[in-house]
Amino acid sequence: MHASGRESITEYYPPKAGAVGALVFFLVMTALPGFVVFDGDEHVFMRVLGGVAMALFGFGVYAMLEDLLRPQPTLVISDQGFTYRGYPHVGWAEVERLRLGIGRLRKGGRAERFAEVVLRDPVEFRDRVHALGDVTARKNVDRPLFIVPERLPVPVAAVVEVMREHHPDLVVRAREDESSEPPAASHSPDRDMVESALVSALTEALPDNWNLAVLWFCLVGDDGHAGIQLDLADSDPDDLQPSEEILMLLNRLKEVCYDQMTGTWLSGQVMLQSASTKAQFTLSFKEIPDWLPLPDPAECRRELATYPRAGDEIPTWLRQRIS
Image (cartoon, rainbow, N blue to C red):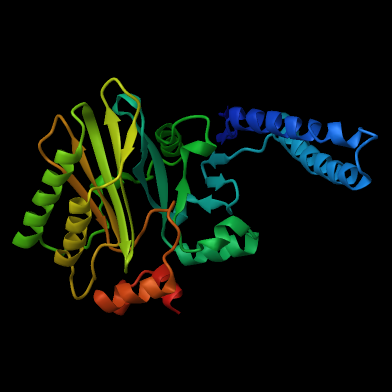
C-alpha cells in the first residue's frame, strides 16, 4: 500500500505471498524437464518436448518476477474516484453506494468481508468494460463489481474506510441490513412458519461447539446450490452439507415468498449466532452469488414459468440468458 497526501492518492498492491508461491512452482517446473533435455540418451522427441515445457514454465517465472519487481496496483483511490485492476476508472459520481457482505468465516467468529460497488448506471459501466477488453469480466457482464480480499494486502473494510476519507459522502451499508427483497413484500403466516421451521432444522444440524452459522442458498429453476459455513469454538471454521429437511424447507420458502409482481427469491442466506435467539434472513430477488456459475437458459425459463414476474422485475442477466 502507498499513500500520497500531496496528491491525495492511495494505492494498494496485491499480496506478495501468492506471487512468491507461484514463482517457486514455476522455477521447479522449469528445472524438472532439464533432466530430460540434457540427457543425451533420451529420444529426440522427448528432449524437444521437455524444451518446450521449459520455455513455457520459464515464461511463468518471468511473469512472476515481473509482478514481484514491478508490481501493478490492484486498487488506486483518489478524490475523483478509484481504479480497480482489470476494470475502467470509476468516478465517485457513478457510485450509488457500497454494500459490505460476508465472504468467508474465520477462526474466532471473524467474518472476511467483500464490498459490492452499486453503480448508478451499470449498463454504461459494462459497455466500458467491453471497450477495455477484459475477457474475464466479459464472461459475466451483468455481475456487480466486487472488491474482494484476495486481491488486497489489508481487509476490505479498511479499504472502504479509506474510500470514505477520499469521498466523505460515500454511502456504505451492510448487505445484511439491505436485503434486495422488495420492501412491499409482507410476511405471511405461512412464511413465518416456514422460516421458524428452517431455523429449527438448521439449529438441530449444528454441532455443540458452534458460535456462528451461515446457511447460503441459490435456486433458479431446478438448479440449486446450498451450504452451511460454521465458526466453531476452539476450532477452525468448517462447512456442512444441508440436510434433506433443510433443502425441502428452502423449496417451501421459495414458494411462500412468491409475489405476482416481483417473483420470488433467487438466492439468500440465514445467519445464526449462538448468543442470539433471532435468525437473520437476507433474500435477493434479482441476484445470485458471484462465485456460482450462471444457470442454464433452460433453468432460467423454468424459473420464470414457475414463478412469473413483471417484465421490469426480470434482472438483466436473467433476461439475457432466456434470449
